[in-house]
Structures are given as C-alpha cells and as structure tokens.
Length: 632
Image (cartoon, rainbow, N blue to C red):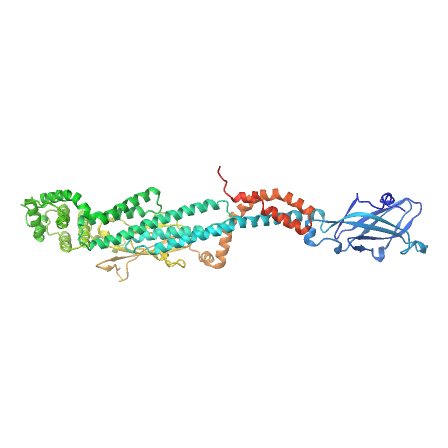
C-alpha cells in the first residue's frame, strides 16, 4: 500500500511542500494510492492544532483496491475552523498529520492499535468561508478598519480644532450680541436690526459648519471676515449712539442752531451710509470720517465760531435784502402777514441792516438763532407765493403759517426742527393731511428688495404710495409706521432679536424659518394717535410673504417644525457633503488597503487590526485631503 506521499514518508516522513484547502461546510477529500497487487482495508485519523478527527463508524474504514487509488471524502466539524470574524479576515493554516492503519478483520495482528501504520505530514488551510466570499469580506473589513482609523485621524486633526474654533466664534457672537443689546435706543432702529440680522446670519453659518466639508477652512475664513465686518459695524453704530446722546445733551445748552443743523445733517448722512445691508471698506471709511467730524464738532463747536462769523454776517445781509428791502409789501401779502406776526424779529433784522454789529462769541448765539428763524420765514414766504400769491386766505397756507408761527415762538432745537419741516412741506405742497388721506384710502403697498426671500436673509421692506410725490416728502415723516412681521421677536434664547420690531417707512428684517408670514403695518401720529379705519379699528396694510418658496402646506410646515422633521431635514441636508467626503476619501483608502492587507497576512489578528487602524490614522493622504494646500 502506498499513497502519493509514500516516497516523501520514506525520506523522512515530512511533506511540507503541499497544502490542502478545507472549507467549512464543504466536503474535503484526499487520494490513497496502492502500488501493491493486493487490496487493503485501512482506518485513518486526522490531527491538527491539538484536535483529532476520527471518521464516524459508518465510514471508519476505507478499502484501497490493488494497484489503484481510492478517494476518501470527509467533512470536518465547525470547531476546526476560525471564528466568524477572524475567518472573514484570514484563513488558518496548520500542520496536520494523516495516520493510516491496517484494519483487516481476518488478520487480528493487522488491526487495532498495534497494526502497522503510516503517518503523513500535511499543510492544511482551514477556510471559514468560500474563497471568493472570504476575499470580499476581507477587503470590506480592511476597508472599514482603515476608514475607521482615517476617520479617527480626521476627528483628532479636524473635529477637536473645529470645536475650539466654533467655541471661539460663538464667544465672539455672544459678545457681539451683548453689544447690540446695549446700543442706544435713540438710534434709528433699522441700524440695530441690520446688526442683529447680520449677527444672526453669522450664527446660523457657524451652526451649519461641517468639519468634513472640503470647503470648511474657506467657510471659517469667510465667517471670521464677517465677524470683523460685524464688529466694525457695531463699533460705528455704537459711536453714533454715543454721539447722539451727546448731541441730545447739547440741545439743552445754548448752542447756535446752525451748528445743531450741521450736526443733524452729519447724523443723517452717517445713518445713510450705515443703513446698507452690505458694507464695504469704502463705506466704513466714509462713515468713520463723518463720525470723526461729528465728534470734532460736538467737542469743539465754540472754537468754530470765529470762522463762522463772516458766513453769518453774509447770511444776515441776504435776509435783510429779502425781508426788509421790499418795504412796500402789503399787509395782505404772505410777507406782510409774517411781518405782523413777528414784529420783534423784523425790527432786530432792520437794526442789523442799519448798523451791522461785530459778530463775536458773545452775540453769535443770538444772531445765529435770529438768522435761522428768519431763514425759515423767508423760505416759507417763498413757498407760499408759489401756492397762489393772490389767494392770501387759503386755508392750507393759513393753517401752516399759524403752525409755523407757533413753533418759531417756542425755544429749543426741536421746535426749530418742526418749523423747518413745516417749511419744507409748504415747498412740496404736501401736508400731513394729504398723507392721512392716502393712508385712509390705503393707496400704498408693501415692497421688498428681493423676489425670493430665504430664512435668516436680511430683507428690506418699504412702504410706497401710489402717488410718487408722497414717497420721501417731509409731511410723511409726521406719521410713524409700526411693523408686525407675523412671528415672535424672541427667535432664540437671547434678547438681541427683540430689536426685530421696527418703526420706520423703510425697515430691515429676517425670518426664522421657511413658511408664509403675514406682514402688517399700522400708523401712528404724535398728535392724532393711531390711525383708525371706518370701523374704529387700527387701519392696517398687510401682505403675505412666502419665505424660501413655501407654499403654506400644513403637512410640510408641521414636518419642518417637528423634532423628527428637523432631524430628517438636517440629515438630508448633510447627505451631499457626506457623499462628497466619501468620494474624496475613497481613492486614498483604496490605495491604503493593499498595504493593510499585507499587514493582516503577516501578523496575528489583533496586532494586525491595530496595524490597519494605524495605517488609516497616520495616513497623510487622508489628512491632506481636507487640509488647505500650503502655498510656498
């Protein structure tokens, strides 16, 4: 009897150049070759790794034909194979021993433990899974472990720094929020709204930052620049508020009205600059120059009197030519009626015309106030003559003249400002009653500066009359629109959002989420109170404003506001970025898998797993994918 290993057995009993493959759940086999002329009945056993396999009784013996071969089939139990996880990664190769013994019932000496035996040494590979499946599982597990290592690397190199940067940005935003809350209430509220919307927009951008997005660093840079711009805006608005308080205090002192008027003009032009949704460097530089002029005039207005004296003297001479020289003006003319109402002012101007005084610091205030009042009278007379110079009893002109007279007889800057507004109204031929009539008839609309509005996108709203002449006229400023944007001002747990309430003809606002809002406006007059409709209710102009294309579907709105809906929406929004990250990482990971698989074959299971994880963790290829390229 012989086998295909007989010659090797005779040369030392070892045959390590041949490897058999045995797969769990599948039949394995080996061939016995007999070169003798007689047949043999043999029993066999297989041992490996401390385990012994003895065929079941039904197939305990095999008959080898004379001068022939016999194939022996067997199936090993599960404990001979690697575990499910280890077997998915690699096969287990062991030295095995196949022992053959004679098992002849006719010859007791040729059977049992004392029977002649042959032992063959084999190299056997034990596969938990079929070869094709095992290769697929191996690559999948290696890929996942390398990916895990790479993700851990990204977490250490990007997520931790991201959180630190995010905390820094949030701290700056919180600080900005406090500054916005401390802005002077005397400022136009639209300036505070713009700062609040800009801060809120940056806050949402910080929340939307994803460390796994390739554009993360660029987004961080843009947010940082946005914060610098916001702080610059807040600083300018805060300075404007401080100067406004100083200006208010200055109004209670003996300050020439021409200086107060100049300061008012500087305030208005500075507000116009800062009222833009987006401020560029040139805008900031322009605003800072104007703020410096305001500061200088507030601090050193007395030093400016000497340079203003010649201008004041020239102004008084011009007024004398307008108001004193036409001595023949009848008492029924507009000028004649003004002379009758302001005898004292005209007498002083006549005295100045006769004996011009030397203007100095002692008399500058008195003469400047006189010139300011007479300038308003001259402008009002000119505007009244344009109405109809022969209709001296026109009720509109008479009522306006009486209002002007009442304000000019009062002291203080606010009275002069009101008188100035009345003069402008006369020149525009539009009174507050004209505005009231247009409001009562609802001859105006709400307009926005964009066709599509998105959440947290600052949007400018304005009220426009059908009659263009009413837009921007002085009489309009007597009425204060009160806006209601259809949602709570407390959008989050902070107080800065309270500034989203607005009272002006042009306002800025943002909305917190995607749905349809009802924006409404009521109107208030300082003397008449809230404007009422025919039913005695506050007259309201309203408009439905869809945000982010919302159609008002209740199911969609509910889903967007529910917790589950928010999670689904957030997950769905993150899918593109995650898919992009996977596409970026995939080539690098595939390049690492071959090296990781080599480590797996050379080492034991757990050291191999650790090595594969380190390959992913330490790979510069993966880290460089999300790191900005360094410019040399």
